Length: 231
Length: 247
Image 1 (spheres, rainbow over the protein chains, first blue to last red):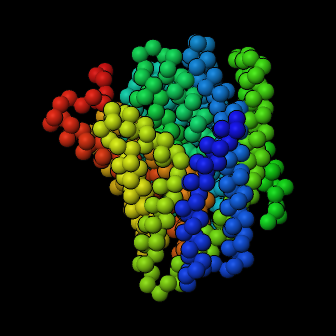
Image 2 (cartoon, rainbow over the protein chains, first blue to last red):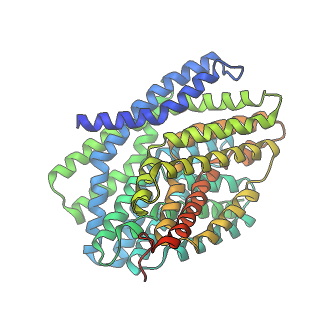
Image 3 (cartoon, rainbow over the protein chains, first blue to last red):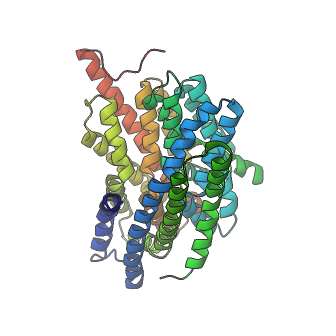
């Protein structure tokens, strides 16, 4: 446990430090921000570092083992519809709890002055992820090649982007990016790796990976469809 | 510094609740894991919630306003194109530091049986992201629609996909996911919004968002291209070890 704290702390500090140093350096150039904002930023850095360390430790000791257990337990239960349903729920709930998604949807809500509400957006993104996680499970079971699924999905994205209202296009693509954050990545990866390792004839490397890539298409399609329906 | 933390906490609890309920239902109906799993889950969720509250509060009071202020300060530079190289270096730094990108680089080294060094892949991903952040800044300054960049980009990705082998394909698309970590999302997005709202005639929604999408696209292209280069090189020497098995 103390070892884990040390590793996580080092990892988080190493990740954040270079950027913080550059921003501090900017403060000594004409590109400086107001000093009040700068001090707030330093306080924010401390909170972000502490928060990230706690979050990663919490995911490691509690949430990940359950994700792995679910992934390796699922195929033994047989029923295809149960596997698909549970994969959907895992993708959905992990995305609702994803910090990156919260940050993006909050910003969109603020900038659009409530026109694109954060609550609605979170659920649309989560449904998109859930849907594609269950599709990926189906793909692993059936041994359907990844590139067909990716080609069809991205072709759909390209076609949809011509019909979606302009302001939804950047929002949709950004939503695809944020789903793959510190919460959803470990859970979805654990599910996929655990799952493909117990199914005979599937390699954990080429079948287990790719789940994250597919998961980020879901929200793009979901948000674009939302834009077409609502506006 | 702590204003609005109550609201943040409520948001976090609301966000984690479905995951907890799902785990509990699983435990009761399907899994029936040993008690130690349950205790660890409770402990883990408690620690993760505190961490998440701190993280989001820090982002809200510190990172977002600083990013926006910095973005707005950039636009005071009289030579606007100068923002582009600044975007490049910020993009490079955030990716270089991202822990998930390092994990992925290790995996590529393994998947290629050591023929692709992890530092090379790290550099390739970071350079790819840096170029696309620079492109993102150019997009905001000159008001280029996102679709002009992203549609040819994904078109190219689909094309490359049919040339790449299976392992590289999966890794490349996952790399797109990991590059958009919490640092990129919180900070670079705020900078982009700051630049977009400070330049006249730009709509923050249309022009400010979209940067994360570009960051996600960059490694997909660069990793697949790298995979192809190595593949053609190795083929000339011997049969590549990492080629996918025949189906």
